[in-house]
Length: 338
Image (cartoon, rainbow, N blue to C red; front, side, top):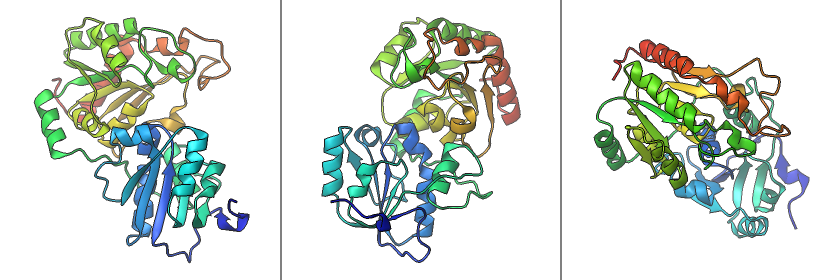
């Protein structure tokens, strides 16, 4: 079984007029959010079609696509390969299937056309890679990422953060700031560095708040014993409502950074193992400062093939550099200190 090569196209055929479309972004929450500009382009091209999106179960639970007006249905996909294959077999037939992340298992979905193109973007950024993969011209039109908090979430965020503060998110992919972890978790900003940054920002006159995703992250932040608010839990759209209240956001390269970019909050992005040209903040205003040490021969390592458990590249992010970056962003935005 499976589909012949004639069913698989490098680009969306110009004469195709689909009535049903399935977009697949089976990955982390941040990756799904980064795919929303492509989903918007698909909706604009086919305004009358039913447009379903298949994402991971974790991403669906996070609410990253909740209330997105482009989407007809949000479907979930298990991580297990066999269950993923069965899920694909049980899906209804679509006129057009677009896997933004290439996997052969998606070729088992019943479809008149499956797009599995090759990316050749003008820009290396992952948003433009996805757009060019679908056959769209990466032109000068900026298509923002989309998040849609509910009225209740917006009201809650306003109560929790009645005045603008500088937010800090030091962790990545569920890793805590208290231990050295392998692979992508090398992006984590360590506990003592977080404490020093908070003190530096407060000495400069800024109110601060700490943000965590998982319970472990939140507990690690509480264990710092800093007299600042700690926010954790809730949906991604609640996080977006909270982050929209900030005057600036200091964060490592992880999902909440993209959430902040989606609501156009000024960002100080702390890079080390990863490449900002590929996964940097993608916001309409572009009010972002990228901090990274360009002198290290091992950076960026992308968390692979480097025997490093000390996060050497992340030690570059001193309180002085962070305060200077925050001050430049807030001055640019014309916002008060607190």
